[in-house]
Length: 180
Ligand SMILES: [Zn+2]
Image (cartoon, rainbow, N blue to C red; front, top):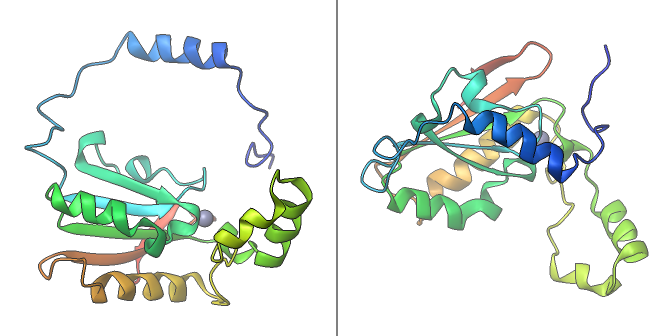
């Protein structure tokens, strides 16, 4: 089966504006559903991977959750955003990782090599010692979920009444299952 994953060319700006214009014709303002007095109580923390569409895959409306993403759904790098979300009223963080995640393939050595070959200042990468560390040697996605769930649960930055749960999205079946 062919896939557009990792092979789509850059989309021209005008094409994006045309697509947006078509969307805007049916757009309804959501003020009141999602404002600062009624911030979603649930937030999903997940990977930036384009195979993940948490709202669609969990049947959620746009205003049901906040979505917080980065490479691998790495909670340590997202902690500032997580704390801001908590301040607005979020009390449940669902951490969703996924099978075949780039975190298993991302190697520091390779990232540094590519960076040094292409960057304006090759040594600037030393300022980001954790970039490219992937999942730090963990082999199973469930282990990665458990690892990050524990970081959040033990973090002094997370309120004691906040629920943290851990999930895996399986790209081969489309199913999401709870692992923690
Ligand atoms: Zn991923």
